[in-house]
Image (cartoon, rainbow, N blue to C red; front, top):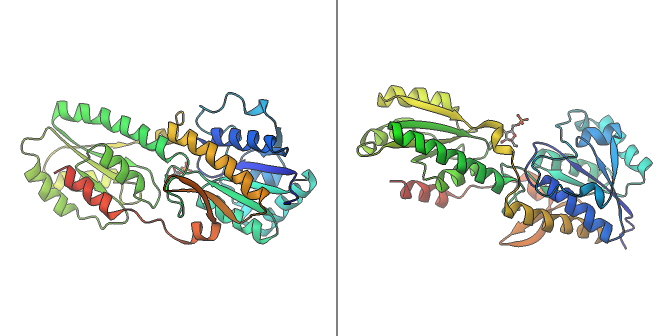
Length: 321
Ligand code: F6P
């Protein structure tokens, strides 16, 4: 017996498509298990200010296909202080909340782990377009973001081919190259620059010079953690002597209705998070490994960098020769 009767739920950090579908899954599955649910607005900020709403079957109707998060999100500096954390714990006590489910990325999970260390039962659900959380093959929002990016780069390719142009396209990912590798491979980018592999622009420029014979476009995808598109473009222009266009995709990558994969993950993660709490677990997160929904400790998730696949990186360049 876990003794849990009421759970609190919040979304924190950068929003990711599929968060709403997950809020729905957690709420409806918790209700099915006869639990009460309250949602805190704006992540940890709502927990500190006790800004919450009672969640029921109706309040999560019609949101499965909406991007963003209807509980809103924020990056709270106050939560990182002892005072902020104690206020949160007091508010949970006042509301009779026995455990917390936090939908977010690694920053949010650091906060979740800190709460656990102060006696709060907490389970995380990984959600970030960066997909940089260790221990899970996928985080919510990554697949949707890839689909958005692929559709945008395909449009850039159309115009690049028409005008015989070289484009540098900057994608998000914070310190990780996972978005860049996966979108670059899926869009047949000619070069992919990621923070995990040393950037050698002279070598790339030499290749572009030979490569461009008979080619109507050159697409370079750069992860924001590797370099700025404007810097890469300036260097390539100088080295190759060819006009270079840039496109920084920006926050458009975070919006849009969730893909099939993100909706299915939302359902699986939502159920698993509630089950973990009912099984008496804490300080862990839901995960998908080899197509099976599992769990792993928050410590493993936040203290180890998620590796990018060198094999995938090499394959992308082999296939775009
Ligand atoms: O973590 C998700 C992410 O979109 C990163 O890829 C990006 O670096 C960052 O958030 C942008 O954060 P903000 O929306 O706060 O500018």
